[in-house]
Image (cartoon, rainbow, N blue to C red; front, side, top):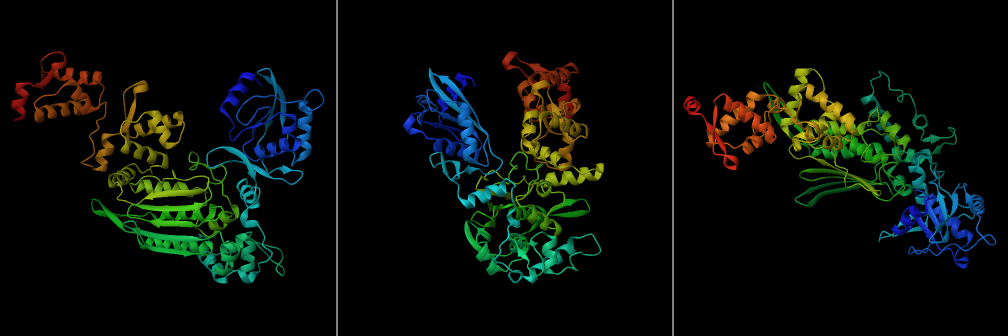
Length: 567
């Protein structure tokens, strides 16, 4: 390891991945070293410095093996005193002429502890200071679930029997399957409750001695039993009007019933607006049923059932909010959520899929995005989510009917459905005309090369125009797109290659205002000063406009003959 690099790391202080330990002989024992390794390994791994004080002062490591310290002995000691074994690397590095032992600790794929049964993990206190804290049993269960070591729904509760499950909930499941299945015969109709549970992997064991899992209780449990055995499970629906809670209902419904109930409550307060499409009037719902279902199902299926808290759905005048305990499942984040597909509980996800309440391709969130963008609204907002909870906000205010009108007209004319990434681009350019390639790439969460390919295809199809060259190139919706939006209040954007249209804009501006400058021409036509000069030169060469004044005071007026002609 490079000493200067290590000095720089020490200078920044302790962090989630960096731990200091004193090197004084009486201040450091083997247990201290092993506990620090376990702590880092249960986090993201990192570096353990032996011979550095908590405040970052480098004091050096006192000899631990006779007259020196043998790094190999430290590695062996850690191997022997951790369970499962943690394989570290250790090296003596001289920093400021003092020996410091640097131990590289890997992140463990499983939870590790000491052979004495001590489990600790890395954590930050309320002031943001790192440290090691006890790793509680419920936290380890949550971590193992998040690491996909176990499925919460597969945990057997030996105190439960079939009598704790509600036959009506099995009937609800059969009914859902019948409504959603394309098959003539519902395979679950011929099964009794035990067989349904076995088919969904939530009941184990033989018929005479069935083993009931947490998944069975969540899907089919009687409410009083569910409340007793999984008190962390609750659902809530709220309706707020003028910041006042007018509806507040909390229940312990099993999951299929909970999904139906929350969906029905949202639909009670739904409404729609109409868009005129010639001879047809098309209804646009205020709240997308597709988006609502997908987001509610995600909250119920992917929540962390080891954490207290409820799945909460609330409606205000302009917003539908859904939240659930626990952060995103492992491997899912803001960047990859439209591409990645990792269920916290595969068993629950599969059960909802069989019931027809979840997307079979595992891309339900994509459908939610697509549905909202097609209704002229912004994509779901997950920005308030954290490691403790997923929070999503859905815009239910008046959508951009111009976008809806364009999509219907364009798709009918071309015979091709606009895909999700194209929808994201359309909304990005609708909200902020004149974006660069990197701006668009950041918005649609694609690489610049993939975004360029996408944008060029949209330019070729006439949806988008490009303006400028090289790094100065910008993209915006085409004038044809705005015409199909039929938005008379939209800013007028001209195809940079449509010279006659640009010239007509300049002539009309002078007719209305008496004169125009080159900077006003550039602003009017959204051109660079150099491009505006080309437009003006063309009009002057043909005798349409005349120059008045010089330098900064120069402006242009219509030729007398043109003025008289326009009269």
